[in-house]
Image (cartoon, rainbow, N blue to C red; front, side, top):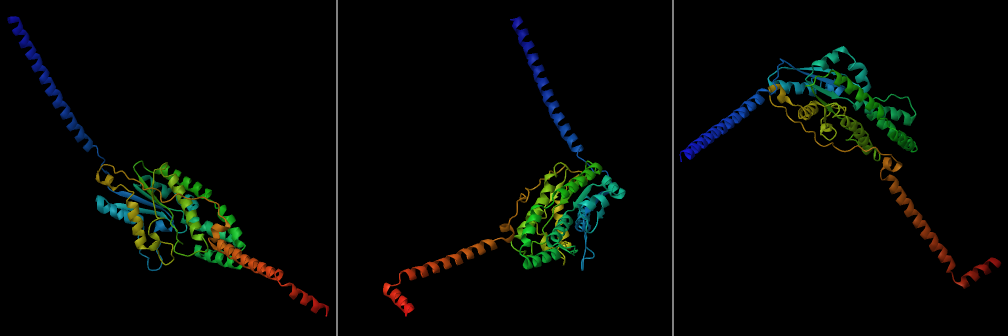
Length: 369
């Protein structure tokens, strides 16, 4: 009996010890979890700089071109910098390396090749880029010169459109040359210059720098062009925009969609450049692609890109495409006229064959007399 009593006491001590160990381990694990959470909160990124640097590259849209009555216009990058200053309570500086009339080639040769621009890239926290509209317009004006066989310098894309329309009215065969130009539109040159610009920017930008690029909108969407030319211009712009989307992941930038926005409703008198409301619209759309929380020590925000507006269509253009329904209408009219003439001819022929025999004899008698 004494033996079994000792065994029970020993088992009781063992159970008590095991229970104590279990309580200690549980407490330790809970304590570790609490420390870990606090550590994660402490590791949230905090902005250490005393200034936020924004840099804008591109053309007159990026520069904030202001025509008559828009001389004090503020560009969308400056508006973004102003908003970041208010939100993060840290001064934001906006440096602009954008010039009127610049296309992708001159962006590389005249802007991204300068030491000042590269130095701004090195310290930039937010990078914006707007380029491509002048590539489109210059290529179109060059195409108009080729179609019309002239060295005339068109003042604007609208001037080129008017000249083409007048040329086609005077010589409808110019449609064939227009088809040839459209089917051989040069997208390769733009893509090569785009990739060159991305390589330069990537080489100099900080790992933490955020970059947004705006795509191209259709400045002539409000105008009625001959035939299906509006749709063709849309196709060409979408093909150029597709190049931007195709390389966004590789070069870590977000595309701001202006093509399907209301930007064309907020342009200046020239119908091309955004007015102040247009610049504000671009700023709002671009701000959706920028994580300002990192400047306030907040956890990184996941920025989701919406689906691409529409897949670009690289199709071969034909006479039916350019003229729209006009050839079909002409064909239907021709078929109808042919049918009317044929019916008239058949009726007349049948009328002659069914003439009574005595009438034919009288006619022959009259001839003999």
